[in-house]
Image (cartoon, rainbow, N blue to C red; front, side, top):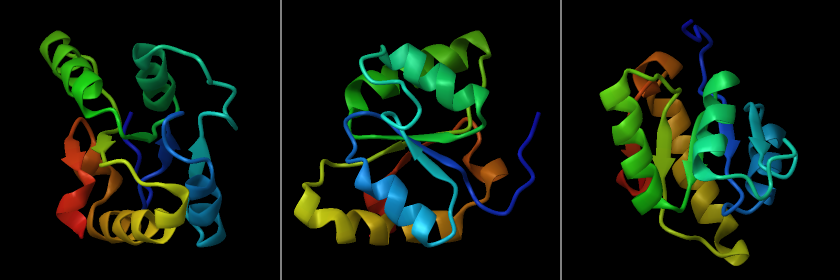
Length: 124
């Protein structure tokens, strides 16, 4: 089932600071952190399963594992709402992470994000 909403809904895995989900919600976007979803300590596969089942693109700093996982899903025909790979940001760099995410959210629709793996830094 496709998400025909205007903006991508985000799921931030546990490596990403929880504050980013709150900052996005304050700006009217649909975002949830792994902690808020009760998903701390789960495997990468479980994280992507959760995001996919809730029609949310997954934001992560873990490029190596999620590229492999997305490729496996592609080869087996499993669909997801997208994976956004980011360099690691510290809490004091929250503003820069937020700025890049807002550019991405304003540039792509949920349908354009579907089954894609996007590098966030291309939205600098």
